[in-house]
Amino acid sequence: MKIKKIIYTVFLFFISCNFFIAASPPRIIPYILASEVPLAGNAFITESATGSTETITNSGLENWTSENTVVSTYFKVSNAGILSISLKANIPLGNSNVKVTINGVSQNVSINSSSYQIYSVGDFNVSPGYVKVDLQGLTKTGNYFGNVSHIIFDGPAALGNNVFCNDPNYYYWARRGPSCHLAYTVPTSNDVLYYYNEVKIPAGEDKIGSFFMVNGFQEGYFGIQVNSETERRVLFSVWSPFPTDDPNNIPEDHKIKLNCKGTDVVTGEFGNEGAGGKSYLQFNWQPDVTYKFLLKGQPDGTGKTDYSAWFFAPELGIWKLIASWKRPFTNTYLKSFYSFTENFYPDYGYLGRKAEYGNQWVQTLQGEWLPISQAKFTVDATYTANQRVDASGGTVNNTFFLRNGGFTNEVTPLNFYFNVATPTQAPDINVNDLPICGTLSVKNSNIRNDIKLYPNPAHSFIKIKGLNANFWYKIFSSDGKIVKQGLNTGNEININDLLKGSYVIYLYTDKQQGSFKFIKN
Image (tube, rainbow, N blue to C red; front, side, top):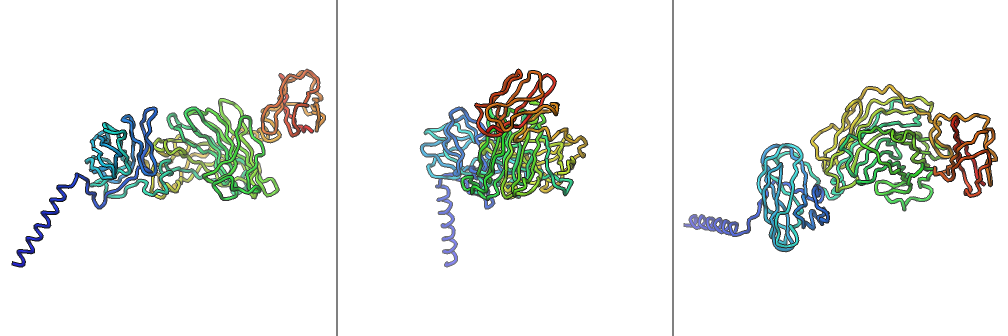
């Protein structure tokens, strides 16, 4: 009798449990191995109309009002098969119907609670690799389709190693995407004075937010950017030796000082990823065009090092000075030659980008050009922390390439060495003709040695001795700006309107061209 009573009691317990389960609102009961993907670090607004209000915040998708907006969330699975998908969501008022799409297959789900609930969507068949989950609003009774904090997935395809950003410290960096690098093998232990490199961005790979860094060195970087639909830059920056992300914290004696800059170059300070001096030229560089970069690093003999950068665009046909910076507490020639590809706008982190780097050379202090034929592939902490892994590299057309973003499934072993055929044609650059502080770029200068500028220093005028023909001239300030120009017919050149300082005058006739430095007192 006692045994029958126990059996009856257990029976009633299970009956009551089933009653309460049946009476509860329909909700997913997650598998033990279910993964919750926070939209805060893995989602992007991939389609939207003008005036849309949707945003991705540290809480996930918010202000979801437009049926034209598509929000895409990405994660990577290692197995093929069925994925069961759920949403963790709420809606401030009313209810809504939402479409969830994977690989072209869509299922709908209703959101109807003001508190966060887990809503089961259904099963989808996926392949190994990155999975894209699209959300799009269909109907709503209030102003919002809801707020979504997580995509939850489980099922057979979820077994194994899955990749997505689950660390709040990486939300910002994961939405930017992992950066990847080429560390070049420099074939000498001698002091290196110049780095030379070329880059071409294939058509369609020049996405907004891209930074294709070409000539990296131990104390800074030099490359090209896509800053907006209407602006592109050539950027050259040098880090301060003072460890900080805020330039305002740098002591005066640790600041990066500008020696000079090229015409139309903007200079200032930068922060957030280290801090120091920056310089950039707004230049509308184009895909499928090869651009050349030259960098010089030379100690000045006082415990500081001067870093100077030049950019060659075939559209211009000349080497253009970007800037020359002086770094304190530094006494070294160039070290740690590298390139990288990255995205600096989180909202564009779902887009892929690619750069091809080729024909690398270094010039030693003795003036010998040496070719580079090997580079090591490395990645940043976002990748190594397994928060996002769509970065790869390789070789193509005897150049090195880097690719990041786009949630591709290409895999490149970390610290893998790539090799290309050794370049044979050294850069055709006369470094003495390069524009730099106190000089001017004068290619093939052929002005006679007996032609002189006087007086120097000068107060109110300068004259050119030995040049009998009429000549044109341009006077440049120390920061590369033209401050005076004209045609001289043999008379003195009035400089009363110039401020005190150093200048360069560039002279040219039909047969001769050259430059002189002078000082205005």
